[in-house]
Image (cartoon, rainbow, N blue to C red):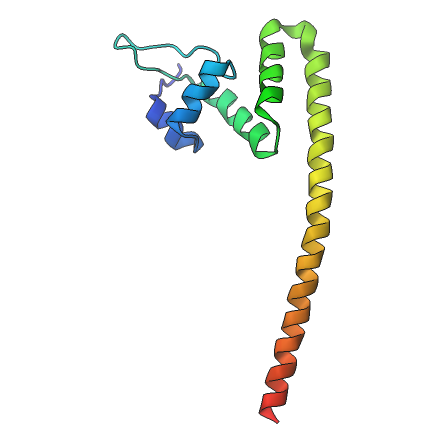
Length: 129
């Protein structure tokens, strides 16, 4: 049986703001969420799993409009699996390129750390003499 969560509980659980959750629903990234008798949103475990996946896509730099395209394809049905697969592969290539770029930047930072560590040691050695 699904545990039904309020928007605040989902915000706490996912780290996304209530505003972001409402926005994602408004633009169609999240399908319409069931409502309690009082009109308050009630998120299912499936909803939370989907939101976590969206969070992953966003954290890896996927633009919201590309996320929306993926969500739309998902709702259309299994005949869009190939298109979804290609979209995710394309995104993976972009993420790998970002990682490669970040590795290069990290190498520069590591170089500077090494330089300053050696410089600090040199200064300390000189001041001891």
